[in-house]
Length: 306
Image (cartoon, rainbow, N blue to C red):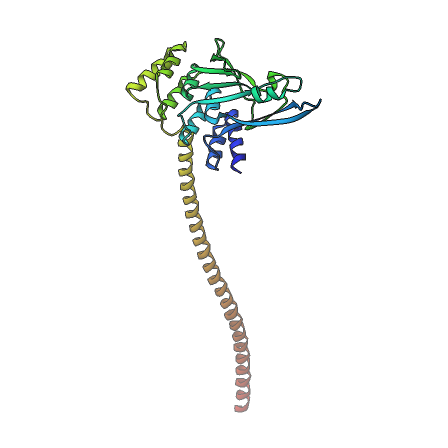
């Protein structure tokens, strides 16, 4: 399950979704996960046919991808969740070709290029990297045009006998961002002569200024994101609203109970009233009957006297 979460995390980083990055890490994805690239190729079997060979390597880290794509919010979430800023960062780019590869080509240079920066901070500055060819030849990266090649998009990438460079990698122009450099410094990225030299190569003097200033007065970690502050305030308002709703419901229930008691009393009163009203009517009838009998007896007695 964690492997699937790790792949989703890489995809969320590339999409620039800081909310998904945070959620996936909280669900178990590794904050230091790396993109996995599998190269499959047809390799001459020496009998007129070919065999499918494959090899899988780990490439760009989630943090490196966020840095290269200049995703400031994603970088911040990864750093807040503890992504490592230490050590070199590197990734490989596979070979390509129309024909079947020889066994020697597969063994020797299936991974055509290896891109490496001495640190994620140097990558954020946009200088100081090295491109190493399969034969050991090295070049500075990025080139004067700011271009390099990165892995194709996706958390898990499959290269099935790529025939062109577009099928094995993506051309990419580095976009250094001072805000990202400051975030990395605030979360513990070390400044060495390598990073200082990289900053000197950047045309924007703010990069070198930020590194030197940090050495004198370390950049503090930023406070909670505005979105998180808003979420906290909203949660507090929700709790208050829930309390008010509960209070109102209790009052309503109390009034309903009182109304039921009053209704019961009224019903009892109505029942008693009906009973006594019936009794009263019966007694009135008896009274009239007794009065009539009394009148009759009076007349009889009067007749007897005469």
